[in-house]
Length: 220
Image 1 (spheres, helix red, strand yellow):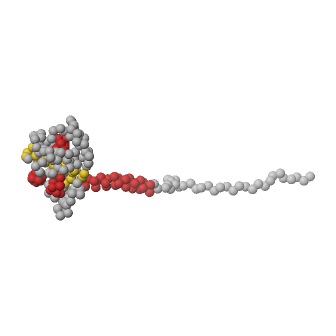
Image 2: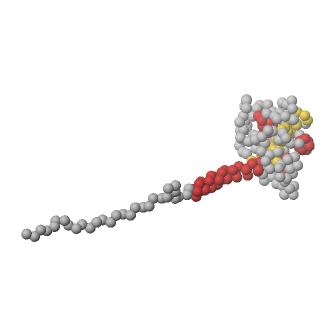
Image 3: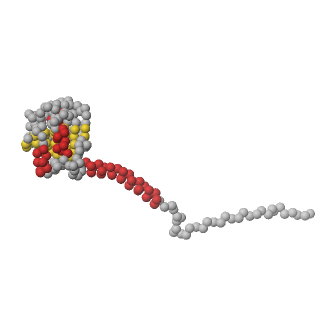
């Protein structure tokens, strides 16, 4: 009897070659994070510039003392405010403008004249209601410039230092105001010529004479 072999010849599966290990002490290369870091830093810088630049420009405009050419000076920069209330109130008032250009005010007004100390807003606004001119100046203005301003003050005017002005000098009548670069700003006499008659005030023919005389008065 013939004997047959039951063992079938099965082909062997080829072995997968092993990946050689990295040499000891060396890691697989990683993707650099430097581009991401640069992008984040650049975004932060752009954001900071977007916030800082307008603030710097605004500050420069507010504190500018650049001289105004008399030959080209105009009153185009006069700020206009309308329909301000004129109630008499007791106590302090939170005004929207610095210095205020009108609004509720104290029943007592200030006597006309030049003051060497800040005056109370609520009393000064009553003067504006009477058609007075209010010249405010920065406390650090030179004595010579203060004297120049006093020479230009009309009879129906008050003048006093003011802390926190947006410019070295500010001239105000009821509902009108102009920021000035200093005592020599050619727009000051222009403003006085155009508004010192009190035509913007509710009581243009009332006088600031006979009001409360502040202890800081040094002249009229």
